[in-house]
Length: 192
Image (cartoon, rainbow, N blue to C red; front, side, top):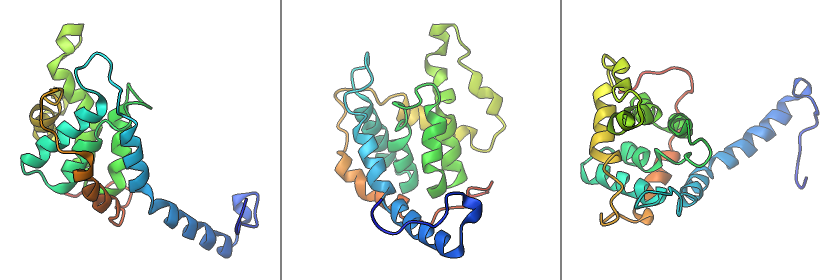
């Protein structure tokens, strides 16, 4: 490897200097998160066989609807990125997408993205012999209605090839601002 490296081969043998070096590199790497997220979003182009739009267009439509509806910036970014990990985790993308966002958004936004797949079942599960009301197990959760609204107003209706979505370049500064935030603790937290 080029450049400075740590002195250890086992983490237990590391020194303060080793971990200071790694912290510097971690900070530099973390500063590029928005670039990697935007690149991953670009990978959604051309995917989503069977629908009239690809995953990127679906994401742009969802974010555009949230933006035009007056949603706060972090929710607009969440709407843009809610399916970002569909390519890696098609059967659990909400949880993985939520983990990408979690250090930078409130618990409410994280919870909505994490559970949106279950809430989306309401629109089609009955056609496949599944429970369209599976989301109701969260009926008493404080963000239940927010997740219902996220799916109803922005997500489930964003498969329209004629919708006038805003371009990715419009959302890029928002993504950069959200990912430039000081990360929240990954420990359980309460943010409205």
